[in-house]
Image (cartoon, helix red, strand yellow):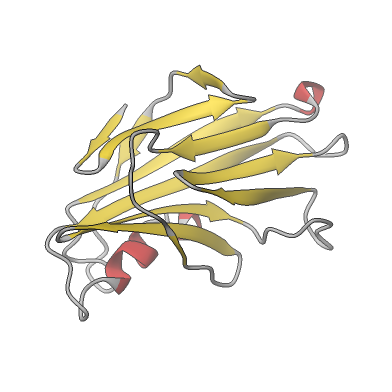
Length: 151
């Protein structure tokens, strides 16, 4: 389990908490040299699982998140005191995605993937990154640090 300054990161499948292994990643010199934590969480989805909600969240968080999306990146950032933490997911969340066979949602305490009947077997990835203290100049680093396509 990842312990962050804003609380533990938990993974839920259809509202049931599961254990997971997170990989600690090195900082990227160009994009996120000053982040304090950078992790990748992978979940192996199999087609026979059918419809699932795969949630990555901080259940104990008590601040509102800010959506920070990008091209093929959906992410939510939480700010508290001098800490900024970002959770990222790969894809573009739409009700009926045109080019993907899955979607997702922003949550009060995190982000989730949503699979469909037709979702193919794949690895769903979450990126988690935080920086302390954050400033106007360095806060973008968690956005890069939590981008699963850069891991």
